[in-house]
Every structure is written in C-alpha cells, then in structure tokens.
Length: 161
Image: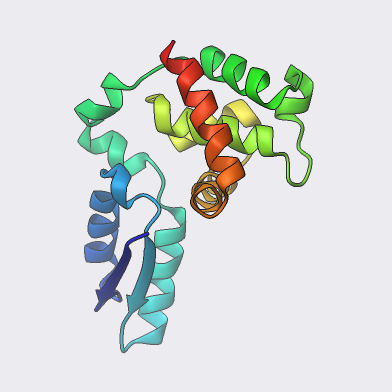
C-alpha cells in the first residue's frame, strides 16, 4: 500500500486538489496519507477536509474511462455476493458489526460501478463518510487476509461470467 506524505498540508485548497487527484487513481485509493504542516490549526482544518472528501471531486472532473469499462450493476454484484457468501438479501444488507457480506457488497459497488460514495451510502442507508471509510478499511483488510481476497476473487469471477 503506497504512503503519500503532504508537507505543507496546512494549505487546505492545495491539499484538497491533490487529494482529489489521488482519488482518480484506483492504485492510490488505499494509500496511507500523512499530512504535515508547521501550523497545527491549519493542519486540523485540512484533516477535516481530507476526511470529508468523497467522490464529489471525481464527479466534477468526470469519471475516468477505466471506470466505465469495468462497470456492472448493483443487482449483479448483490447476486454474486449472496452466492459466494451464502447469505440472503436480508443477511447481506444487515447493519451488524463485522458483516463481511455487506462490506464486500459495498466494496464491489465502489470498485465495479460508476456509483459515487454518496450513492452507495444511500443504497446502504449509511452516511457518506461512514460508507467511504468502510470501503477503504475493507480494501485494506482484503490485502491482509487470504480468506477475504479469495471471497473477493470468487465474487469478481461471477461478475465476469
């Protein structure tokens, strides 16, 4: 996972633009960001902005072509997740702690559709910030767990059929 350090991150407008650009690249979506500035107050402001950044920056700049090429529907993703995880509709969307089916569903929605985090949040009845954080965290969990990576691979194979 890449680590990106912004020195002088107290310049909120500059940091916002850079962070928006970073979100355009799926390879950088799971990056660890490190913000540094000599002015602690301005750095706190930038940190708040960074935590709120979701797909609004991407939607203003247009969806990159690679996103359109990999697009599928939420319904197909739901079918794949239910089959791989062996769960019902209700179990997949249940707001229970550690619900891997729900996390996988949201992660795949972000990865394989042109839906914005805000739209994914609406589908899952979550706040956009919570949905974005869940998706990012699950992306990191997949990299650390062979079991989750296998579930992801099986789900993606079903999507490609």
